[in-house]
Image (cartoon, rainbow, N blue to C red; front, side):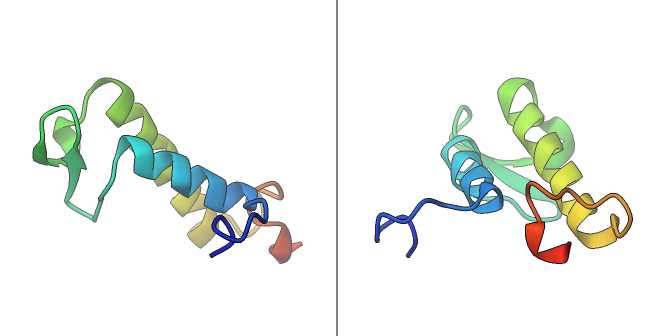
Length: 79
């Protein structure tokens, strides 16, 4: 909705939009690989897809458990 209305996305949502371009779908066990054209297990990720999935994992961990060191860039509403 923010994107379509021309309002700039917050950093967290901008990251998710960029992630969606590289990895359109992901869950706890698998992701959709644009390169392979099919779903693959997370541990089988390679190259740029693996890098994006690792960044997403770190960001999600920080959001869920990083009470002390929560990223102020991605989660400014926790400050």
